[in-house]
Image: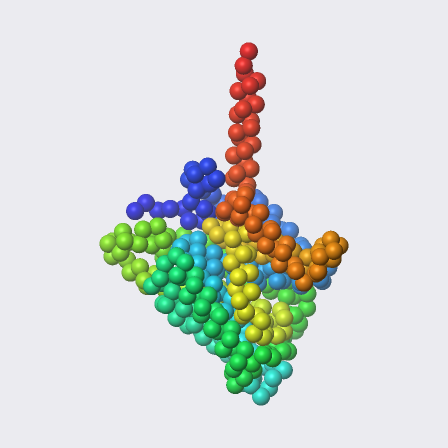
Length: 361
């Protein structure tokens, strides 16, 4: 089976094979990546605390959860709606094992014990979900992961012994490492940016590794991969475990950003939002979920003012999100990233027509 360049979508808008240069070293990284990185590093110089905290902080974290979904859907052909539940479980476990404003429930462990324990439990939960989901296909995979996410939400809301029920946990603060208050706008910006960058390059690396190539082969033709001796089920469960790790890290950053976690964090709405984020940005490129998250967070943040100015109740901000989602999917099923190949193809076609007309006597 010939290797497929998994770093980008397999085909462009015209159906031709679409590839980008491999990021095998600093010299091979395209200049536009350096420009984006330079802008992000210097963002605190020009952006205020609100933008750093409420826009980019949220976008990086939600983008990581969306990235975990993109890895499953883009490279594994499996769409899971339980990724926010995995992230929420990690957030809850940090509050349970660590310190919070609910001392009668929290165990008070130091962060270097609470964080690994939260990651292990969240990854184990995500792997169990994967073990159940990989035995289904298509719409049934989506439904079983949605059912698990729904059951987890109601369990969290009704359980007061471990999850403190409807109230959840507050005052869940990041550790004071190196004398820095990591919940301040600039530190939390760089913290989330750093982990988002690591998650992005980790997905790129894994997708180019033998496991990632085998996973894409399983996506394209599971019967042929099984005939070649690959354990299809094991590869799919391993993909869920890897995606759960990324989502769990995002969940820990989320609880530190909010300083709280509640059943609303793992409700059905946020689970659907992650799918919207991944689809808006693009499900076949690791940068897509971050673009989708930035668009989603921006709309969610400023929708109130926009809707009120139009005479529409501000709480209906999901209307703008839905319209944006429909418009992008209508014009480009591959999300925002799919618009550029289509636009470039249109320019090429227009130039060809102009040239042909200009060449006629």
